[in-house]
Length: 337
Ligand code: ATP
Ligand code: MG
Ligand code: FE
Image (cartoon, helix red, strand yellow):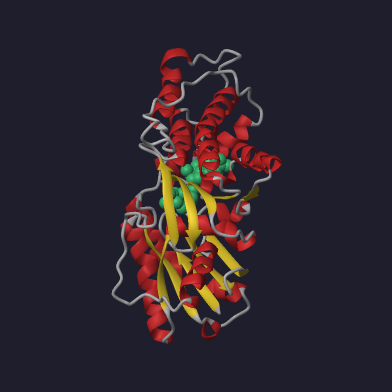
């Protein structure tokens, strides 16, 4: 089955053609990063307008890139939740129109579940496994029981991990988007130059929850209190120290969850799964006999291949959507059990 995937939930306008869930024939990602850069964040109205202008060309490029014609597409998958409402609606309505005109099945896909599924496309893991979803808007430690069955163990109680990277970078004028810049700066910094406090959470009731607003505030306060450009206080040292704490907060909970559940397989997904320190710390768990999977870099951040990949699982089970589905800014994948 050849599926066309469409993704417009935030600032990436993406379309991909994927055969039988895993064979990525094309994956076009047109990023709006440069156009949102002056505002140091995604401007929702601007995102929707750009998607409207770009979507036709991006979809055509994905079909041509797969060496196909639109008639060769068997089904259409589109992210319809969660994300920026106006941005989601552009992709959703384009997908509906194309599916209706071709008379082929169409399905709305949950973006968060697709992020988590990305690693499955390249490194299939047997269920159940531990899922670590780390992105710009979400931070979730969960048990993945099937493509449509997820049990949440812990989430962030405030900021998402990616948001903390972005806000720290924004505050220190390090550039936009922050995650990849902090990762790069950290490579030349001393991660013990600053000591940031860990979060104070009620760990008895919610042992796997994480919190990032305390760390973010502590890092930001360094600027007001101490930022004076001395040899210790370099952007590299700040980035490395922040990154060590941010990854440390997550790893502590992941280790506990692994110990308590006895799961032996783990897959990460989402933009922060591209982080080099997180990748190396999770990979190090393989020494303890764990199987660890990450998406390749291109499949970590927003892309339509993961949408078409996950859609194959649903469509194979005959679970297409009706044309009456809407878009939603909310997460549906991770209801806390
Ligand atoms: P969500 O998926 O939760 O709706 P989103 O789509 O905006 O949010 P993603 O596209 O998954 O998020 O990821 C973007 C996030 O990943 C940003 O916060 C970005 O800073 C972060 N990120 C990207 N690369 C890295 C990296 N190398 N290290 C740390 N963070 C990174
Ligand atoms: Mg993005
Ligand atoms: Fe995303």
